[in-house]
Image (cartoon, rainbow, N blue to C red; front, side):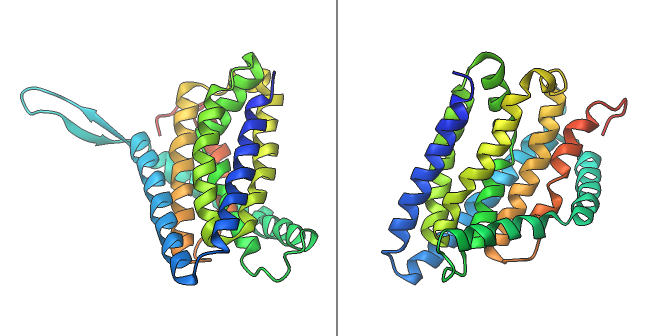
Amino acid sequence: MVGLGTVINVAAIVVGGTAGALVGSRISRRFQETLHAACAVAVMFVGIAGAMQGMLAVVGGEPAGPTLEAGRTLLVVLSLVLGALMGEALDLHTGIMTVGEWLRRRTGSVSDSRFTDAFVTASVTVCVGAMAVVGAIEDGLSGDYSVLTVKAVLDLVIVLAMAASMGRGCVFSAIPVALFQGFFTATAVLIKPVMTPEALANLSTVGSVLIFCVGLNLLWPGRIKVANLLPAIAIAPAAALLPLSL
């Protein structure tokens, strides 16, 4: 069944977020703050690992021995700079925050001051990444939802931990995941030829940098408007089509 992977992913986020919100409401503020910091550190290192995997490579051998070589540095810089300019022009941050505030009112969570931040933070964390794109495309082309099933398990754990420290707003990150992955599944035939291994590697590298930024915001709220950097994840794979080495 085409699209089943996204359905499983959305269900996992709802289950994990709901469980986390229920657990979080029953633990003290001190434990919530420590859990929040733990989530921040974990998200930052997930981002670092993905970025380093894309930017570093082991080269060489005898007699000097293997060495680490950096790559995609210019790609990351240009993607983030151009993405920031586009994001600020479109003011995506305000748009997403507006959606979060609307959900906050519609769900009767007006008294929850952290609802919108929780929604935005969780949404960016579970949406940005090559697994979402690759899994959705494979689901659309062949009905293979194995990648999205693995992602669903990871998202369940991540959103559960986030919801325990930030609240029920994390549950509603299931909505952008459904829209984002549903788009790639629906247009898989058109997108598949463009998403070459190099394009996917670019997407994963820049997406991981954005995930690291999410971790920074968890520790120091509001420092980076990550939503306004989101166009970078469209620029990065598009750069693979250029006859240049970035």
